[in-house]
Length: 465
Image (cartoon, rainbow, N blue to C red; front, side, top):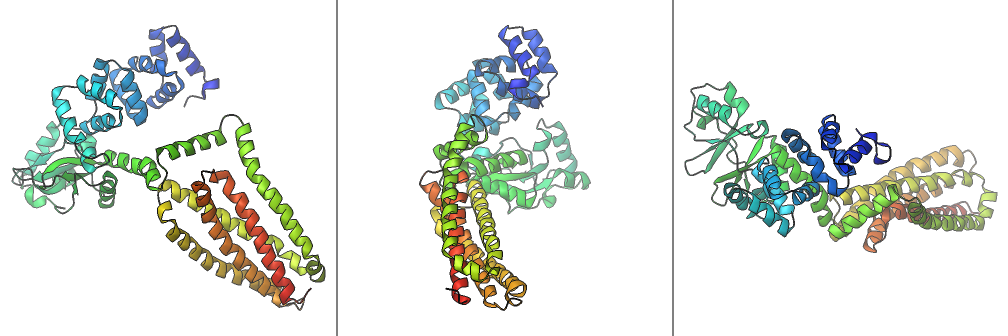
């Protein structure tokens, strides 16, 4: 894979030859690259050079590269092409992919691309674009293999051999009536193993497994995944077969569902999503002053909180002086709460990004996390309290030390799970960056609270003033 732009000799050579319009020599450079490497080169080149670079690829490699680009990149590339180039590129795509790109393109670009297509392609794409965005109908490929129930197995295999569909589109043959009503499906493997002179109808199965054109494409993709099918029939309101959802379509639908769609469901629309992406990019790359400024601001909370905790410990000097064993368990209480809080914030961040946490129903999810915290707190408190009792309590004739440690651990763990969910959610609502900001607040609050409970209980239960 080519190195980054700053120290990539291939990129430097390609840029120079494109700048000087030494196209034959630039084409030689591209010929030595894999499609994945060409994609990297395209992303490093200025936008004005993208189409020129793409024109230098032979037809087959150009389509391989085009398939590897993201949807936005594909639309921008098509937009920069001439009408004839765009028409040629679109003609190489499946109809469902054409509809997907046209649906993503700005209206003016979509109209120009539609005008460049043949009337037959426009008609097929128009049928798909009539379905709602994100629906199975929009995603379905109208090119599929279907036979009548009375068709013979050897006739069907001959149809497969003569088909111009790609290997990924001929894993499944659908069985329909004369008016295209869905009867069932049969896999190519089952046909190969069947009696050549048997009828296909009796072999058909899963007549009840299908999706409507108006169903969510992501739900249809999950059904295909659960059933482990090569393709899923997509039916209209009258149960007529209108298309097939194939494996690659399903992966596209699931990818969309776990990115843009899931960000919207999580209460993070496109602007908020873009803001999060910008924050992440600025924290992980670019000028180091930005991450230093953002992170140090939140770490000041920990610094001030640490000083406050130090002041708290000073207030209980008499407890520490009277019972030295109390100091042994201070790191345990602080560290356990910190680890639990970090777990909760990580689970919250991942769940939010994947759409498993919906801020509009956050109360229910917060209640669930607190219940998890309570169960963990009881277990950890019992183990920690027992260890404190047998290690330092009983031998030093201070049995209530175990109770103080156990109750303090219970408080610290429960509070940490609550804060681990509640603070990132609150910061998100306030428009703050919860990635670098949540943990310092959690650490400060649970340290102060946990130690206050611990020293207070130790003083009370051990009878120290």
